[in-house]
Length: 154
Image (cartoon, rainbow, N blue to C red; front, side, top):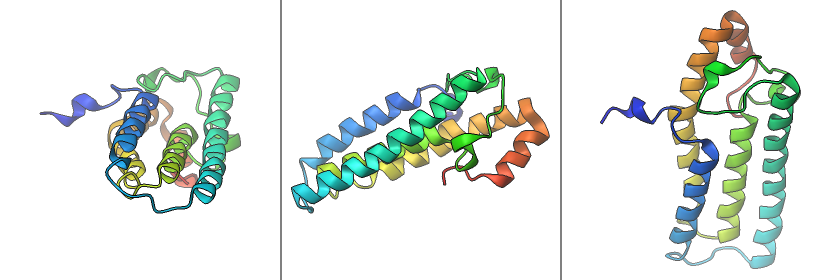
């Protein structure tokens, strides 16, 4: 199977939803390791930070009037490098990652904890790397300079 066929095919929120459901299923197979009150508080804080990152990224794209379609990065009309994009090149994906981490903590399952890392690895290979190629082709030196200033995740 040619792995390139998976590049930019599945929108990241769908990938995150599939991972979240898998985490829920896996959590039934392991004992809980964190007290309910503590895990809920920690999970809510991490989820709130994740939502803030994702929302900030969406708002910045809207302000720049560029596409938010993750399956067509070549249709971007602007390179967004301000706001939250000064901290991370992928705030929406970082937001999804943090939400998955919050979910893993809320589930309090050792089996669910690696899932956010698997999500990040999948995103790096099948979403972010192809996006970076498309943005490099479209925005050239400006995008390459941005890549040297700002990290992929944090």
